Image (cartoon, rainbow, N blue to C red):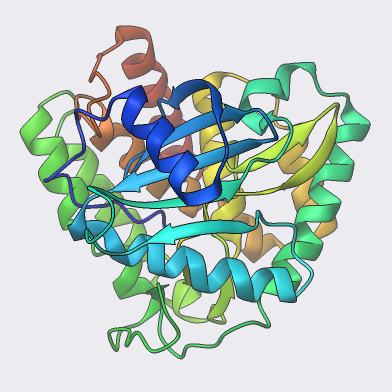
Amino acid sequence: MSVKCKKKELLMNITDLEIESIIFSALGLKVKAISRFKTGFCHYVYDVKTEDKNIVLRMTSKDNLKYLKGAEHWLGVLKESGVEVPEVLYINYDLKKYKHYFMILERFSGFDLGYVYPDLTTESKREIVTELVKMQNKVSKVSYSEFPGEKFLPSDKLKNRTWYEYLTDISVIANRIEENDVFDFSRVTEFERIAFKYKDLLNSVKIEAYLDDITTKNVIVNNGCLTGIVDVDYISFGDRLMTIALTKMSLLKSDYDLHYVDFWIYEMDLSLDDLKLLDFYTFRYCLDFMSEIGCEFNGNNALVSKSVINRLNIIFNDLANRL
């Protein structure tokens, strides 16, 4: 499951002049253009073009410093393991020299998978999945945990609980659904009822390390080919099918074809039980997506689209009927 950051102390007033000063001081590069990525939950992320190369600037609050520390550690570990991740160019953990906490990273050429998905050929989708499966296989070997959860650093201690208990700990989701009052709260109780049906199957899952958020975002594609993966702040422990489920849910929400998911299923040679788990995980992510409708993250507007609400209700009902 994707980790959501704390929402307080957000950096609302960073000027282009400040960014130019940071980049020149840290790297000695003159900035030509700056634009902000609008999709971040935990950071203010900027696409910065300099006279020498393109880079990414991630700025955050003191409350979310663990994301920067996690990124520095895991990006190094993954790069050593042969996973295509960006190089960390500079990192600032204190306010002695600069006014903000930040990280500067290499900028891969290309766009998030979700932006280019409608234009990708079937063969490109297959090749991207093949590479991502290889990456997840490498990730599964970089760390170990007996219990499910997320580790920003290897020394992090995870709560002693089962996979079922982890997945049904949905208090944050339930609170958001109740507070936003966009979807009927009965959706929460319906999820809990169906989850109980799959308790034994869920608890039979082998806990392993994986990247949970290499989905329609954080997978960078250039001219139909995978360039690499970005935005790695932690390693998840659980079932790597969760990554496919989040991808599937994102594609369903956008009303895109599911050929990409079919290739994941083929490459991983999923069993009938695996396919049931994939549906259940997608069902859980659907509830999570519902809970985010009406929320505001990092100053991004919380627009409520009736068509999106209707589509999520249809997806939820379809998955509930299949489960």
